[in-house]
Length: 370
Image 1 (cartoon, rainbow, N blue to C red):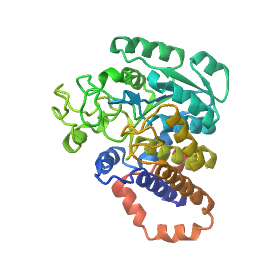
Image 2 (tube, helix red, strand yellow):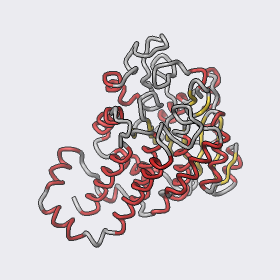
Image 3 (tube, rainbow, N blue to C red):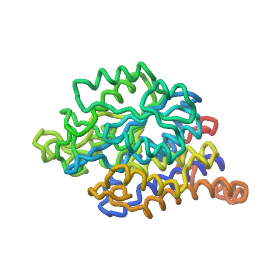
């Protein structure tokens, strides 16, 4: 292990810890993270960032799938949509790709308005996205299960992506039923995006899923763990009577779990920013605040139903603080690389991290990371 590898490890640990800060205190984020970390064998943020860096190139399409609609208001929530747009910005900054936000129609107004916050042009079709730079497309996906496969095929034929990332995107259980956090059937409210994600995965396309409970698309990767330890997740554990639980059945190859799905996405953005040595990829707390206000004014609601700039009960100060801590962490690591070189040398000589690396996960050679 060398200085750069040790820094990457500890940056990843920092970001993973920040995205799993638990202000509510009931610990579900830690339950999910333990299984996700065991599966991934390294910091979740770094793993997914490395995969994107080794995959994406200029002009590629990237699907970002999101949009959870909540009871009793039947309106889309803040979580997922805010970070999806900020991730689109980051991927344009880092790779000059063409992001496609796939979501229910309930989110489209927010997608358009948030596009202007992040500095990208909005289009509602693939054709104009292909033509114009510094742009993204917002595509409304059907809520009709009978139409989902046809729309998925049409979308893939128009623009096959190099990567697909789902963020707080509803995922059906093994019986095809979508649930909210307390086990109520919300199938009629949700876009049926599972088929699109599954088709892309079968094509061998890089896939990443970000979730914070287990009812999100892609979290089937840790389904057995969810069923054992997360309320309402086990078979028969939901309250709708379908006989299944809330755990999503579709499995992603790469997963990120966090207290708030948006925070998991921010960790991914920060990891990309550090690995690419480009601080501009990570947005500022001021942009985070603008995005939260804009999403709220566009009709997105907090988890508890409040029409305020908050995500999963966490207000603007909490969210902007998470973003700022992540950004300052990677900024410091970049700035102090030479200043701290002697300390790295002395720490590495004593071998603690070599033994940890052998026991926890095997670091890839540096050339495979950046």
